[in-house]
Amino acid sequence: MIDVCCAFILKESKILAVQRGPQSSHPWKWEFPGGKINAGETAEESIIREIEEELTVRIEVLQPLVPVEFDYGSKQIRLIPFVCKITSGDIKLTEHIAKSWLYFYELDSIDWSGADRELILRNQESLKLLFPEKNL
Image 1 (cartoon, rainbow, N blue to C red):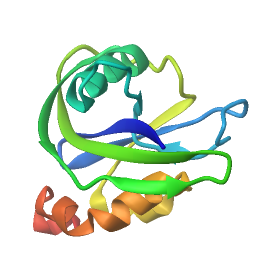
Image 2: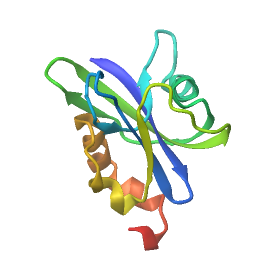
Image 3: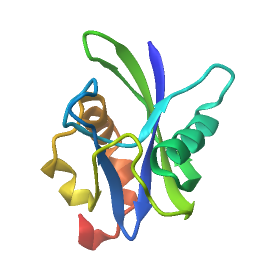
Image 4: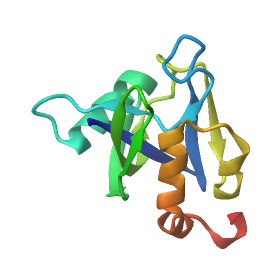
């Protein structure tokens, strides 16, 4: 089981999604940005580092969400999510090919990787609480 963290980055009632490239392990799939937790690193330390590496921005972790375990066949991951906000910097993609800011009701409009789709389903009620009613 590989521990991986990800960020639900909020901005103006939207969540950031990023798209993987054609050479990645999940080509063209959308995901929440993040990555593997290094030895000796907490999940919270990891997500701050990963977002700085992948998006070139600093974030603040606001709250954890419920993790999910997902079996891709070739690997099993535990995806550990955090709700975050950007505190400084402008997003520059270093590992992904596209980004999109989505309202809660738009989350079903893109092709998520399996673990990220499961994460949305598992945390649906918590996510609803993060958004104004008009966006549901």
